[in-house]
Length: 236
Figure (tube, rainbow, N blue to C red):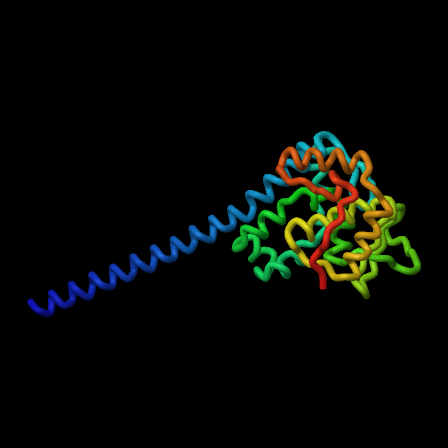
């Protein structure tokens, strides 16, 4: 009789442990799923605004000024995607939250920064890939690597050189990100961006874009709306 009671107690304990383990696994899976959902929802919402509000019917890519239509989603997606001018790898490094995927899951600050449309522009997919997370700068030699697109890459020194006419717009995106989120720019890059900002004031298209983003996301880029906007930036 005692042996039966003993075995019953053991079975009950094992069943309880098993159920607790299953619940822990289920809770962990649910948490990961929820974190992944959070990581994609905010950014996905931002991209929807980009393709349906900022570029409601058509637009041109940042680096190459290539026209595209947003009326045909599949056709657009094959050639044009979203480029973060201030690289997200720089942001994850600054926030010390791990890889981009880890930051998307774990950091609400990262997700908010990642979805800021003042830093997101349409780009030809192969140009976006070529730029990678290279810093912007001047490249000696001016070798055209992308046909008529005036955009150069120095793989050895990890530098990307955009065409002069968009340098101001790039600068105001970079400066805004550093200012708005206290992200770090290396001194050399910060000085260059300030020079580009002064040399190339905001144009009508840049102002139009910024106005829509402010309306849709409630975020102002003072480097455009209050130009010239002078402030002290964090840098190395």
